[in-house]
Image 1 (cartoon, rainbow, N blue to C red):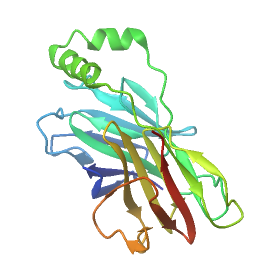
Image 2 (spheres, one colour):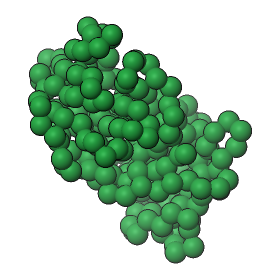
Image 3 (spheres, helix red, strand yellow):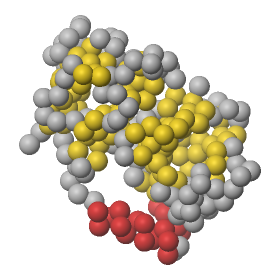
Image 4 (cartoon, rainbow, N blue to C red):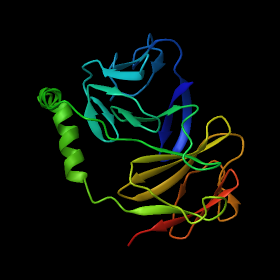
Length: 229
């Protein structure tokens, strides 16, 4: 099962499951997913399911669609992708991702290839050009960090946090996400009745800005957050 998770400032606001072969997204009431935000077009985008997975198509929206910070017209969605329609930000998640460590699943979003011609065409729209210009001006070197596995069979293993969004856990049981921005790294709970613990405390409903040395406990596996100077 695939879904889009609406988030704001690292907190989960709502989940939208993708049912059927086609899911329309926009501001108008007739869409499968309605986003009440002026930055979103009436018919903004559509997600279609085929044999290869889920494909997102922008429907010539005014403010465009971005995946992991890159403007796209079409994109094959991957688990953990950060999808932005106008100013509305979602996380794409698919249940049953491939495990890379015992008890802990890790999958990072990958920047898609973009059609230069499509991007050039969209830059002729003043609204889109302004958004892209602001993105370039605001770009700063992203912080670097890693997770060091402390317990279990993978103790001592280091996992660099190099993507914009990294999911941790086991789908259907407990899933957390680490967002990477110019402001740092934020841990947020995505799925499961039990929430991650940070430094021995339940992180509750709020997201947590990770600090050097923080210990994350997820599915019984402890990981230490290491920020690079």
